[in-house]
Image 1: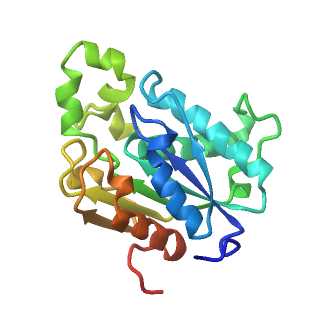
Image 2 (image 1 turned 90 degrees about the vertical axis):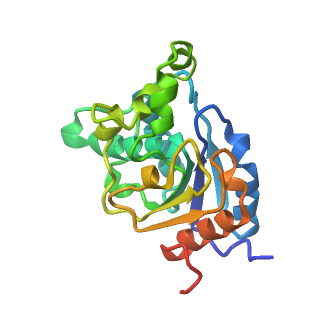
Length: 229
């Protein structure tokens, strides 16, 4: 078993996807813990809030976590919608302190972005380019009411997904599922990605794939999905 103090200055934040809860990431959470990482799970109302609403709250969470653990590096591992949430939240954290125009409501003593020590980010099956499946499901009247962010994830030219910022100056790795019918490997790519791999997995349970878990660990440690140092 790995030394529990091996990554004592790092925290991994796990962010679930749409229609899921923090419990969907529990096996990955346990795997990372066994490998010496401290983890915390971020839970949000993934079906009832827009991406803008959810990302604002996640930005506050990142600031609060950084305030409480100022000596820790914060890694983020996301599933599906969680990756889009993270992209938006990281830029929000930055703009919150742009000429003091905005301060997060839940953070009275918030830190500027340069004092928030963001480490590496791994996105599992993220619809970075939008999703053709979202186009299809958005056409059915009840679904956008039940899954509020679904229309924002369309892959059309006028889709809001095209306006979601791409974080800069941070290592981002993307893992896509070869058999994913919700987010194809092509739709998962991010312009600023440092590494990208495709694994034999579908969408919903990609985080439980052992090869994925190993790849996540490798990226958090080395900045790429391979095993070489």
